[in-house]
Length: 217
Ligand SMILES: *[C@@H]1O[C@H](CO)[C@@H](O)[C@H](O)[C@H]1NC(C)=O
Ligand SMILES: *[C@@H]1O[C@H](CO)[C@@H](O)[C@H](O)[C@H]1NC(C)=O
Ligand SMILES: *[C@@H]1O[C@H](CO)[C@@H](O)[C@H](O)[C@H]1NC(C)=O
Image (cartoon, rainbow, N blue to C red; front, side, top):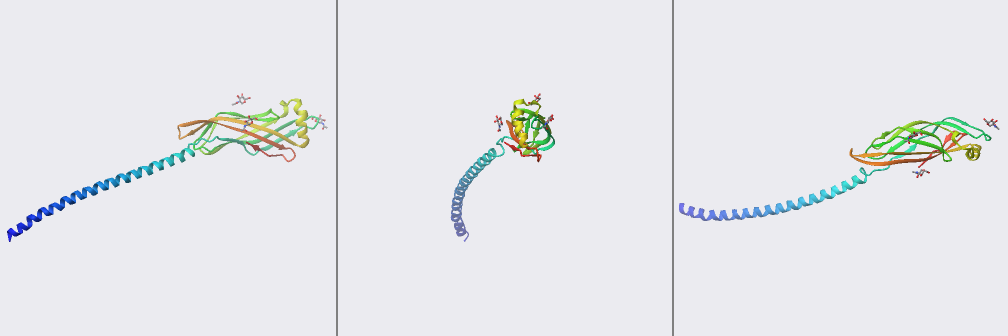
């Protein structure tokens, strides 16, 4: 019985070992397949990640890193004192307050140099105001309140006796304003790009109603 048992045990032992080797090779095969699948998965992940990065970088460079030219504009003009001469002796002496607004839509500050805002009548400078150097912050508008005095003292007689005389006749005086700021937009604390902001405004002053219809570009 013991022999029989032994005989039964012995052949059964190798047959038991044989499938175990098969199982080993089978598990190592599925291991390889698993690794292959893992590699494919990793490849897909990397590809998706690369595509995602390209999209992010493109979106970033089209929005955040795109340097936009800051804008400079005048705010509402509030007339303070208005003196005008008559038709025989045409002249003006006007003071008003307004705001010089430097609008920066960049994702970083705009640092600008000091400049002059000039006011002209028929191409002749009749007043100017200086803007000290400063900074318009991250996506914000810097507002500088100024008081301006303009008068006809510098105008040649050829202008006062023609344009000014007729404009006083219709009670509308048209001034123009110009400003140009030079400065730098700073992005991500390191990238700097020179940007100039320019403004041309037309400001017809209605002498009767004391209203000013600003038109800037
Ligand atoms: C026009 O103004 C001048 C200077 O103020 C004055 O001498 C003259 O009399 C005025 N003329 C009229 C028609 O009002
Ligand atoms: C502004 O005008 C003043 C007086 O005319 C001049 O001295 C100064 O250099 C001007 N500043 C700028 C930045 O152009
Ligand atoms: C403003 O006017 C000046 C002189 O007429 C011109 O050279 C300049 O191009 C104008 N700038 C803008 C932004 O319109």
